[in-house]
Image: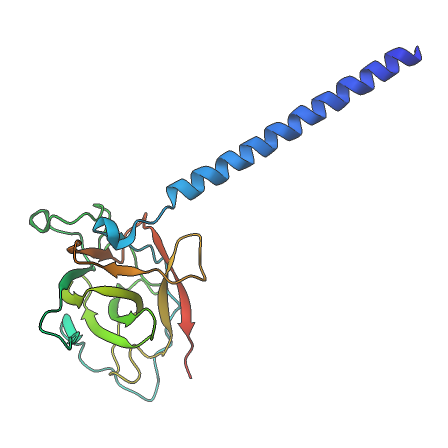
Length: 224
């Protein structure tokens, strides 16, 4: 075969490889851009916050302790304010599908039927709102499965932590473990999600059983 023909074929193969590599890179960048757009978190500034939790760590119940009655759904520690001029915002915590009359921005897939722990039992939640800068617990609430709790929060910036389970052992042992989780921004698992309340905003809703949420979680405390 003449040398010029060999060189020509080699050049053709080289050009094909270059085109294929460029196409693969372009597809990769396109997929990455779509993921970032899809996962953009609007949090409470847009009036709603949907949380995608997935399955929690299985809780091994203490063998030497007996569970006690679950607290009723509601605020266990009220948020306090030092000033009578404080502006307040509303935060609603859902472990069920929002009712039409509640006019919630949460999607219709938020339901206690959509997320269970690995034992197959639905879970109740103990929820803490902490000051963003000091990590001081501002308010806590208990939400039984299938219910909703509404609380008032002073305007400011907060982070959310929670623990969940089906058996309650009191405020020390919680659901049988000291493991807690912190809400994090999607695609940023090491960054706590900011829950921002402003004078202009009225608050927001948090749905813990939404299948397509814009927040994820990370474990922040192990059992002692």
